[in-house]
Image (cartoon, rainbow, N blue to C red; front, side, top):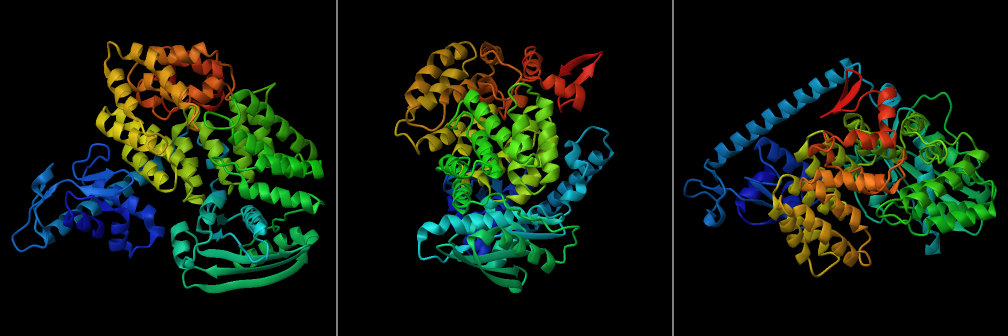
Length: 622
């Protein structure tokens, strides 16, 4: 209500997100995501659409604007703003409050009932759900929850920052193996690094009951670690301890901290998780921590170099190979360092070497199957990832990977449930919000999908704005789409005139396909050297957006797809978010393509996707 009234007081004016946060949450920036959710709630209550607003308009990179004219009795503090009347709201202030609150209550009741019905349908449905993952719900029943904040580097050398970060993540990963303990992922926990934020606010933002914080002082081979567990409800200390050890004892310290936390939270486990000794070479371990601190899907840093040097120092360092496999997998594709063939070979080789040393590594097992060059199977990849998630249910990277494979295979509802787990564990991850957008859009929840994209933008995902533009193209709101495309491109280029030209030229059903055939290669060639993305496949998806499906399938089949997720065809043109909304799956060529990928084989053994069924022994897709 505070947000709505603030927008009404500034009708037809742009109200920045910071202004709204100041009004509703006293300027606490930790609630930025809640603001986006509140705006989404208001839109649903008002039956408004973010792409074609009647009431609340999103102004990219700035804030929101109430575009309806407010008319109230004389003497009200509201003023008329007749310059841009899209609709009229004519209530007294008290009536306005009553109407909106009533609408919100009804909306909340509706959504709650809808969720109840969906849950019941899922319980009663005989269909395969995220297989072995959803059928083992006990692994997701979080009785306790914790966020491990990055430990503060107290060393004289600022270059030891990697060590404090890496140690924090090691403890985080160790705790994530504890049944019944929800552990927030690195991306979200580390987003508070260097911020003097109230722990209670952090707890509410991340949805946890406790927070672990600490410091590390490293001098030569000596390490002093302090840690404390805090109850976020009142800021009280549950447990604290200091450790003075040598680097050779660093793994034992991690075990001790994890055991103390499990004991303090009164979690009953058959055996405490243990770190083990992945290497006896402390220098190699330091490089491993440097890699872990720097590895990032979008900005990988020098993770590969650190890991290769660690392996050179200790050729039996299995976890270094495992992390290297994930690095190669994450950096393969349109915006990665490696093309499909390179990425697959590198991933498989690193995973195989990890498993040759330690066959129990769950992530390496999954990566090995996913990148299996000789015996690739789409179904095998999904099952391997599901088994890995069962072993490590608190691993956000595994959840993200599994959700992507389910999504591409057409198991959208299953993918959504996995993504929701991913978001729950890593709520401030832009990648999590982006995956949430993909799955929400695929199941038809357009408004929620766009809201997820808006949050991804706030979290730093610049390409999410391009995706919002594509969503608007699908809905044929070209002016709004162009505004989003231009907003994205202006971050990199001065001239964006080609965007309007391309949209206008492609929209003509008689000449649009020929126009795209001519202009896409020209535009892509002019952008390749300046932008991190490969624009040829991104713009090639515009054939689908503008309804030229035959041409889209020509491109897919001309690339000679093979039964592997790693083909350039799959990475470039296949896993598009909007495909299932534009007749893609109903096209006669669709089944031909998915057979080549081995996806039909997965359907035969695992069950049909959300939009296909078998009729008289033949697959029929909507």
